[in-house]
Image (cartoon, rainbow, N blue to C red; front, side, top):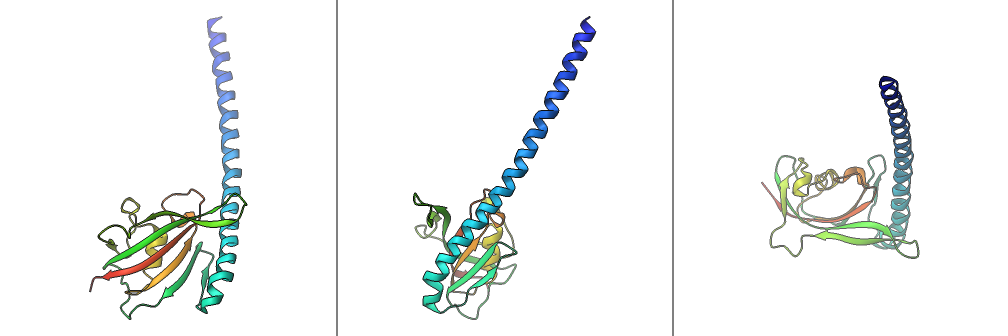
Length: 179
């Protein structure tokens, strides 16, 4: 009798666990796809506003590399001294998130900045270290810049430190280059 009850409890536990695991797994996949789609839609909508309001007025080029989830817009040309992989580079930055306001319009909201700190963020170009604030999208952008240049960089969360499905905008300035 005890053995039958024990076998029945084990069977019920296995069935319940299987159902729960399948339900959670299926829901996760659906939500992930939807969140990625919503992130891309938000970024595209904001970029359309940005391009129409800013890029056209300045007459500057706008490089859209959608396969990476990355957009680079140079706002000030620097010197001929390019950032070299393996060398130290110092940057000033303002990180923004793209989010919707109460009217469902996409806008920029400051996440963090290092302009109030005495020293720039210094790191080795080509090396990502999310613990020190060097994310893949930041590293990629900086390796496309020159000394004293400024740029706006739009990146998807896949190029950030975590997959939170929030597009980011980086306002960057290269302030130091190791020779």
